[in-house]
Length: 312
Ligand code: ATP
Image 1 (cartoon, rainbow, N blue to C red):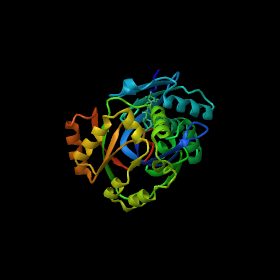
Image 2: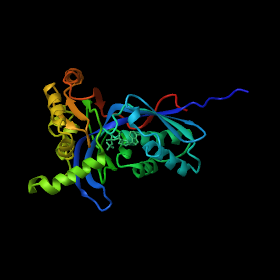
Image 3: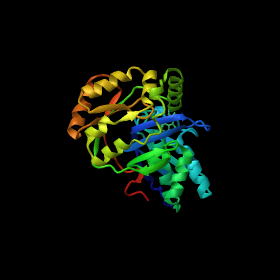
Image 4: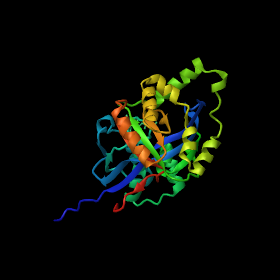
């Protein structure tokens, strides 16, 4: 008898960088109120699913050992959630090819959750509308709706309420990946601590402002204007926990970038460059500076979680 090997359903999902990250005070539910501008980058994870006897996760790539393969993996939780919606067992083998730095402030786990939702909806032939997919994504984590959607978007609430941002042109980035990740909750705690102990009246309360100037700069498509307006409220906390990142940020600008910023909760440093040539030369010089584990180039904005051609 011929046995039929099931074809995997494969989805590519982008990393994100926050061009603006305004962090408010902690809410009653423990989350912080955010105003953020996300951009999806060409750095991505690839998620494949096939039917199996039981739920399992395999991770490949340089940082595979840093990623859990049990119920604490966000992709596992996404599979359980989708199975519940479908009224079936989460009997799937998930393979994650990691391209996004782990615990790097680039929403790697969120990307894998979004990718798993899209892959399983296709594999199980579920008719789930965009709004419902977005709600499922938000249930899994604050950044998951953006991983699903991609592009450039303004995020409010805990980052899960999204509106599209008009962005012209392509932006060229260099990313300095750190040797060791940072825990997002710990960086938020450090930020609260810094604010309680060291904040002056001048540097509190700006987080609720809409980043209007940045939105105008994005509409103009001028990377120099955008570079001047990159802002991250979490940066002081990430730098307080990892002071060596100051040297990385300086090295990227010395290497030719327009500006550098900590991505989200860090520790990845993201450098905006004028064009692709500048990104390549900046990346080469930064690689030689010995200030990070790896250097990558990426462009944005790109689409969110997408099925790869040939998937079922
Ligand atoms: P964010 O930018 O959304 O705050 P991050 O990119 O800094 O997140 P992740 O790469 O999502 O961080 O990983 C944070 C932690 O979550 C890791 O240390 C790891 O233990 C756990 N984790 C759970 N699922 C995944 C996954 N699919 N990929 C990577 N890490 C995962």
